[in-house]
Length: 270
Image (cartoon, rainbow, N blue to C red; front, side, top):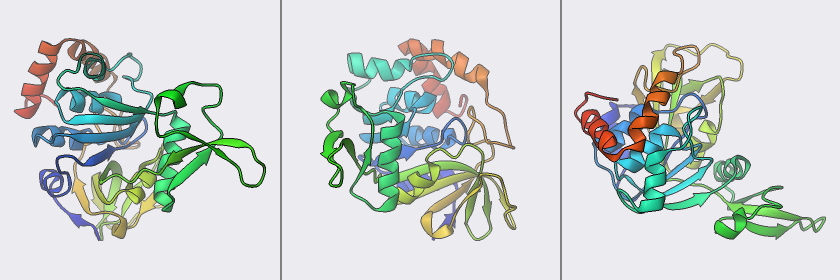
């Protein structure tokens, strides 16, 4: 059952060194606040999982939190490369980074299998590509009914799943709406989960494309208004495109990044 907690308390209780951690959210509802708190608490040797790693993982990789990245399409939306990610892969700075790369469909299928309690997922994908030659978590499998060759991918079951949502009620249930991505699957797949929310309400109103996560699927609910910034929370905030654009020159230069990192740890930058 979920309990309300401060974000620093929730991260300290549920995120440990060496854990597999997913900070999910697709386009919006990305819990940057939780990612920054993990940096501040100095977590190390994490395996980070995420569809579209985005700037939050660039920051965590540059801070030395990660030893491995499981991902599909790594980039700064609308700007270009994630330069801290590239520096880690190409130059081992601040530490070498192992990668496990998938397509969006392949990684989403891994999430779906994890949420369903299955050992692996199956999809028509990767045919005609060389990705399977470089990714150990893609394997051919024959359909037992038709003989068609398909791709199998192992389920994802992180130690900790973290998402942002718009609302929690006073019983600790959570509701999100808008682009839902794999937030639901992330929570259902993970052994422990943290949800940051914009606000607490007495009851939920029906929403188009609304998803309700019951309290028994969540360990900690943290009230963090604006916790998705610079991404957005539909109906609560807008995407901060200037932040994404400004990140590119910071991430390109190690000294600029280290200055940003020092400020963020001191609470000056976020």
